[in-house]
Image (cartoon, rainbow, N blue to C red):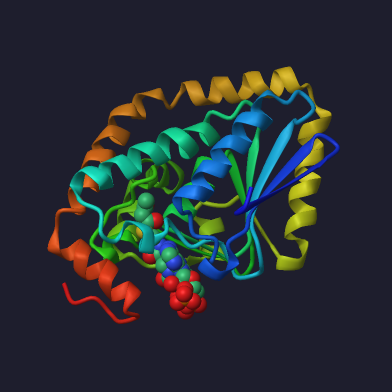
Length: 255
Ligand code: CAA
């Protein structure tokens, strides 16, 4: 594994996404490594809880890797979203043991979508969260249009997605997007303490509780399909070309 680190201590697995020079952005390889690690951990009976975090002190994950998809066409765009759902985001949501996102900094675009696919989120006080895709001529493509309204309500989600603005950790807490905010130095210990509490409970009952809670959200499948198709279509627009080119050229887009 090149882009992720895995630590296992007393029933608790911790995955650290480790691409600090790209603010831990999710490129194809990182998604593939995460997918493989999830498969292994899902069937490892010794593991009872999983914590996912980002390396360094600046970012959890700053999104999908913009540089990797900036020349994609409509079909490739839809494939990018569909594969991401299948390989990573659905896998996390359906993971048989609780998954905690330790949001240690920027959680943007695919990064916030990753945190939202986790079963719950704990943030450090420097975290900033948002879905900035519309500023790139895109929409969220890894579940954000479905999971954000589920967590914060439709109105706040529409505001966050259409304004493409970030919110700070305290606002994220106020809106129910994260369960708790702690000082950055305490994030790891706080998540470990929660994971230890879970690990003390019946793994079978915890798994059953996850399945039961997930059962209430099954009618969202069509929404995800709409998202995949709409995400793909963005790749055929001039706005997408302008948005991603402007990002790479370090200038503001002119839509
Ligand atoms: N993809 C690729 N590279 C990224 C990246 C991303 N999402 N986010 C940051 N980086 C890279 C930068 O290009 C930069 O690389 P270089 O040093 O080679 O120039 C490096 O990480 C450091 O970033 P910045 O210099 O930009 O750091 P900053 O402190 O000035 O700004 C930031 C931090 C506000 C998070 C800014 O990096 C940013 O806006 N990043 C993009 C956020 C974004 O738009 N995410 C959504 C992606 S689209 C998506 O996720 C689609 C989907 O739903 C599937």
